[in-house]
Length: 505
Image (cartoon, rainbow, N blue to C red):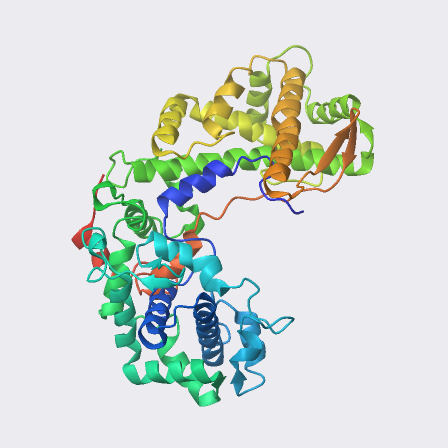
């Protein structure tokens, strides 16, 4: 089932949620890592001061794995810990020898993280640079931003990396910092060390009202990517997504948290005060593209699943047979009625399952129904969607707005002609084009079928689902800051979390 985004239609969704929730990724779900890594980088610069990249990376690897083992010692079910599986193994054999798990030269099954610079380099460094907290020096070593030393940063940063590092030091205390540094240098940690580190350094120990909590809050509701742009061009999509999400939880307490974009879809992208804003409309745009790629992927999945038992089939014959199977689901498809009439017939009957089925014709029909439903539902908004996508730079090849406009130009066709046109051009040919493009750019073959001399050869099927727009990670951040409670409802703190520095459209 490998090869994500087999039709290349999810890229618009990814670009959109990246705009709306910058600084948060699908693999960085604990916000206290921001302050921990700033502190660890500052500790190296202050105490070690060796301009050697390998020594720096070894220091970082040991530090992040020591933290993982300490937290695992305290609570083995704590979520979102980098290196958690190896940490669980390490606590079975104490005292902990960091060199066996974390040192750069370690190979084999004990190595806690294969990427050379650890979870820090693979997941966090880019984010922390975008937020203006870290940058690289002339030795390629990461250092904390410090307006007192870097004059050009003074007017650009809301929070510096050094300020966040010192706030973390304040939270854990100088004695624990010294103990942590000594363990890193010796490479050996006993159970008492791990217990002490876990209690103070666990990722859920951000106390409201502390300097650390206040600075993280300031980053979250501040400018989106201060490490990339000047203050003059700063945007506040993340802040306003948080505002909208908290409103959603207050207004729709019974809705699952991942329904947030579809709540704004129901509102046609209107903000909670009824005004038009890029923030609310952006999530509306994202939601419709999610329906779009899902519907198209349903058709591809149905085609592939049908091909499994008909491998090495003539393409033209198999396509005709596949389309016939869809049309035989009802009698309204006979004759020369338009596909629009066929769609309305299905909608009035209302008996088409909303879930993919073992019946490939039923699954394909559901995909086509969803596409035609999207075209009819959003035809009046397509110009606004296209303008938004271009203006904000999130429009990608295959986006829903242009796709639905193209569909609308062909709804006069008879059902059989429409299904063949769409299946061949927008599903089969598109998949082959996207797979060839990925092969050329990444060297990875993601083809699910081959076409050789008009013969279809099955390779693999696909899974179908929506993207993860970083909402689960945002919720985890807000829980760690006590803005949301354990049931994901706003706390008393949420009422004042945004008010002092809210940037409206």
